[in-house]
Length: 131
Image 1 (cartoon, rainbow, N blue to C red):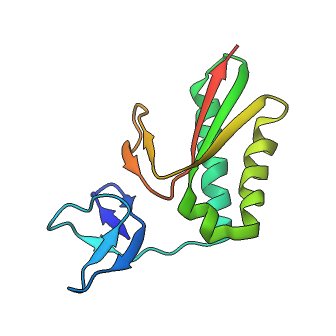
Image 2: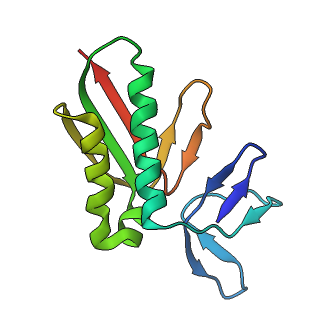
């Protein structure tokens, strides 16, 4: 589900339909929110990971990257299945030979100036450390 926040959508992973017909999500959906059913493909997940990597590299400005962390939602890994390696490969290809570590998470917190920040599900997050 995507919560409409005006300048985009904050994604939430639906987990179950309750007995009363409500949808239980992995993260909060504020009462009264406008939500939309979202869809994606393997390619959109790979594109998002590449864009997150590129944005992190641009944030370094003239500094040389030393190491990076990559986090993505466990729901993305489950959705992609065997294709998840392509998303990770796209990040590695863009980063080159710098050290990379990361994991799948139950949501991501992204705080970056001028970007859509807050708690997210189904979102690729890249953090790069300079030398």
